[in-house]
Length: 446
Ligand code: ADP
Ligand code: MG
Image (cartoon, protein in one colour):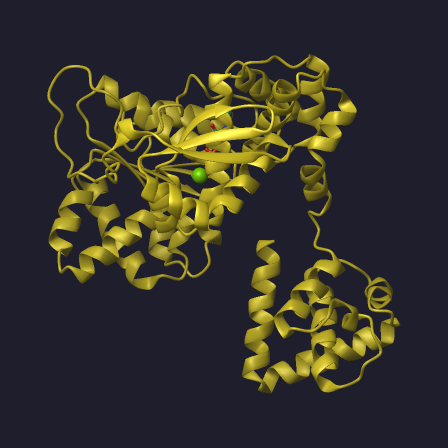
């Protein structure tokens, strides 16, 4: 059961880190320790009653929601104080790179020890990325430089990148540093404000192996791209290994300087694709080894069928099913799994944007009722949002004019007319143009 507690908590933590601002997460959530788990309660501990009170007053509902989502059951949270952890946990401090003394070293503190090559399942969707990463890990700066890994979220980019670090650290005296592009940016801004750019540059140009995750973050940030360009050149020229990941090919990053794109493509470019069903099954089997309970093959196959495009959701699905099974002590059936994973199934079906999602977003934005989208009101304050929603349906989905008309309780001619109206108005009305832009972005991000 102990394994189970930490597994559930690590998944819930992950969810919370996605919903909470980073500083809030670091300060209030990262310091929580999981203690125990029963059929309906998770016990968590913090270092003192100050944390306990603050969390209870501010974040308990969110934590409860996250834990319940992971378990697939409504869960209660109990917060306790663990006096043995009296001092406040120190925030992780980034240290300047230093040559390590001889002798085997422990993994770099900013690498996740679980992200190793041993734990990475290789299939046709990721074999190129895996081989290239292994080659780089075996001879940094001699195999491929830079290594540029790209692919959709949850496909193993961060895992592979950190596996390189975890491979290099115990086998050499090279200094390895992993950072997200966002954290790199924050250090840069910080250095600018403290007038400490010299130190910043010295630090980042001193690593032997620099791993920078999610470089699509550079999109549209000119000053940052300039600094990044110089960091890249300095490292490259002194034959240091650079590894980069991105959620898309380099030339598809919006508003990025051409000279950066060329550099990103100098070495090896490898795409990570969504895993095929055999790989998904192999991943589930491997992840299951860490769980207290083994699921029948039939169930494993079923989960692999449902969750297709993202390995992180695949893990989340497995955790949920295993938690449910071990908490209820019931035999899980296919129907139960289907029920437990219903939101993930919906998610997959909603891959194409629905007219309703658009109507909802537009109604929210203009603060009108969803019913007004299909209603008969002609006042401008309702008619304009309705037209905007039709325009967005027309531009963001593949639905036909009659289908869109139907969703708004109107005919296709009205849709054509509305779209024209909006397009025409946008030519002169900057505010409307901006509104449409914001809505588009929000909807595309899902
Ligand atoms: P990305 O950085 O591409 O969004 P991650 O590297 O964070 O994705 O991977 C998401 C989760 O899936 C991680 O927990 C990772 O360990 C796991 N994972 C991804 N690919 C594999 C694989 N081939 N074998 C085992 N686990 C994997
Ligand atoms: Mg990642």
